[in-house]
Image (cartoon, rainbow, N blue to C red):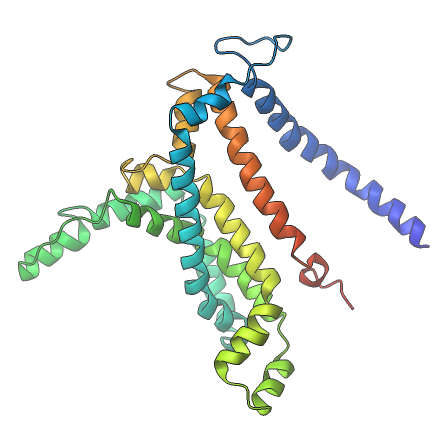
Length: 284
């Protein structure tokens, strides 16, 4: 019976496997091949040339990668701190209001990311919604926070909040209330309950939410362009420039492969630490 179920599971997975191979693996293979081609050569039979990878270090593209990873890490940490109390409320406190809050957060995804970011530009710019009205009403003025690293991180936090919030709420919902109550009855403080019970038992949700937020933020482009005004060049911007204005496909492919390998390694490490059966409710 178990063998039959396994065969049926494999057969059921075949269509999805084929889609993933065609839509995900095949493009990555093409990018990997282009990354070892000489510049302005588009022949698959050409001798592999790894000069594009050397350019990554020689021309300082590693700085863009470090900026992207650093801002992604900062935004992920901020999101974790911001979303924890909100996710806890959704999982344990709010009750029926959780549905209203969920709909409100999801509705933000129905609006284009670029449109929402341009809305923040109009809000934060000099003479914009905040500074303009404040100056008109009180005479107080301040410099625009736009075009810097902090506002880019703010944009990452704003855009990718749902990707941290919902997995985190799911992880916190997995923490049994009886365990928390038993710890409190035994004299545990709130801090001890948080660090010894809530965080360890909600770790799958924390890992999934952190991975989603970090991976998306590391490859983000709109935030650095629209809010940051390219005060900091993200690695995604360098990739876009190499493929479009530079017409240097080997360089763009090499930069893409470096980013894919680093993000993929981090993602695989994180997923290996997650109990997917517990998240999906298959553990008994």
